[in-house]
Image (cartoon, rainbow, N blue to C red; front, top):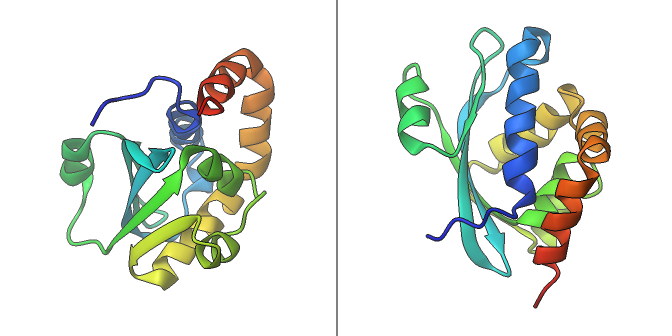
Length: 153
């Protein structure tokens, strides 16, 4: 799968991981492996792994499958999510709810739907909306580049 360097998720998800590493009070009490396929014009562009193992173990957000597997302590439920890059940003910043996106077909979920819904709580608890918006404001030039490439059809 070709890696597109102009993905919004490639900018925002590592930033969320960095913030979680700095503040363990943000660690969610959710357990599961979220395998997120980020698409660009409905074609897979990247795969991200969000490994959450409760509020005692640091969350792992990575695009490295081996790192996610090695970091897992015991068995965890898996949820596969497919989402367009720009929709992922809307989801993280609160502009698009998981239920609304799922019902509209903008997010596809395979696996435990209840666990998938908890991902929204994770971003809310971590201040995902405010932190993502602050990050976007501080990185407007990168976002403009990503948006200009994503809008070409």
